[in-house]
Length: 188
Image 1: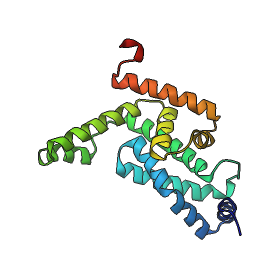
Image 2: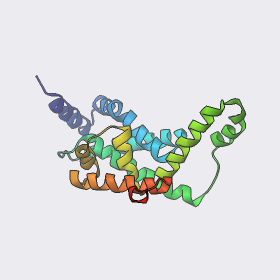
Image 3: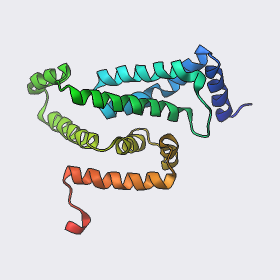
Image 4: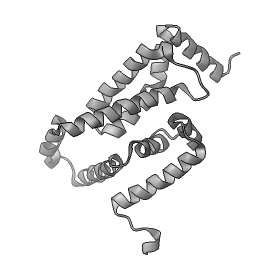
């Protein structure tokens, strides 16, 4: 009987050979985490859906060139997602526009209970602060808190040692605390 790791390796190998059913399995296995990563990086579900589709389209187009390494297949997908999101941010910084759903949200705020508005505002404030961080720092937070990955798994995805991830995570939390205006321990 194959172990889950051996089964995964066989599925990846079949996908590399052009087996659409195997790629479909990889798609289903990774769709939610790739979408979540992109959503938290963009803050817009329409763009997250579009970019997620582009990640898997790109993966499908290049699966024959995929080289099996000691890191999980999802690391390859995260790298594709990371690059697409970076391009998306670069392109969106060139053109500023208010998405339709934000315009609708402004009109509908009178219909939403006040506490829910406050909760949404706090979440949006936090997400805006996170989006001010470098791409690597955003990635470490999303992989740690949204995907609940270990430092080793994050290191595999980001091609860094576990110690480098611990350090990056610590520096990220310090920077985020400064963005949010929380006092440092030595300021009490």
